[in-house]
Image 1: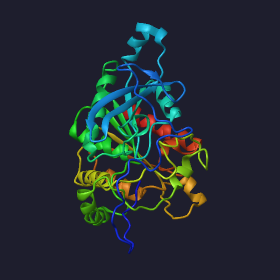
Image 2: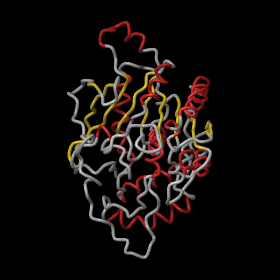
Image 3: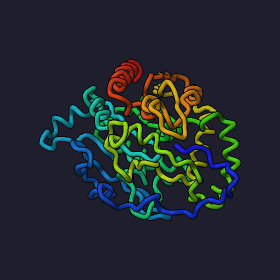
Length: 358
């Protein structure tokens, strides 16, 4: 997640808008094409399949979202379809500068009898197309389109109300969606949801004052933010982590941050701070500590290096009446991407909670 805009003495004039921080081509970095209308095709994750969801056209051209699930056996026929209807669906939404890559998470849910789906939002991951500004949105409410479309597609096979699971900005996005669509979900599982700026709401208000002129005049201008790769280093199997990451979909130094996008996120933070009153039970998983720094340290392999978990734990109480917050020692910012022993503990506690409340 981005830090605050620079307050150094150099001019705060934003850079000219650019479509991406690096060319959208290259070895191992090819963007996907749309699947044929209504057709599930093999995914980049082995054993998974994806479906393109067409969305509206904006100033950058046509938009799509991508729904991902464990591949179905076409030979299983109507009998499997009948069994499927009784399963509880799960819809997972990723965070900023991210996409769905956690196949073990999907299989954990499937083994427990859930029907797991992940959604790559427009201009992210499988849904990013040439000429688009990665991650760009002028309002988090724009994602109502793909979230609603994905849930309708899922409901065609799985009529049970879904569990919504979101990581970081995805957790914020789904919380705001659930507030606008009461009664549509059976439960919320939030993995380090980005519910407030680092520090406090006062920090957010100060940042808003700096950001408003930039976001109003040049919303797609990129902010001058620190360029660190600590989070990527903690999760990538090219560094200290366990995960093979697509170089364009989860780049080492994150997407560049448009001012208008950060303004939209802070508007979401303000909405959470005022209280959402979600009726659904909410489960929030966090690391037990945050480690910030300009230089890499080994402590960063066992902590949240992106968000202030103390602030998140406090702000989570504003989500609704029934909120459970669980802190996991040694967990990363993406709790479900932590070391395997931690993931096992997290999964055990999460499924116990889901069994009781969802």
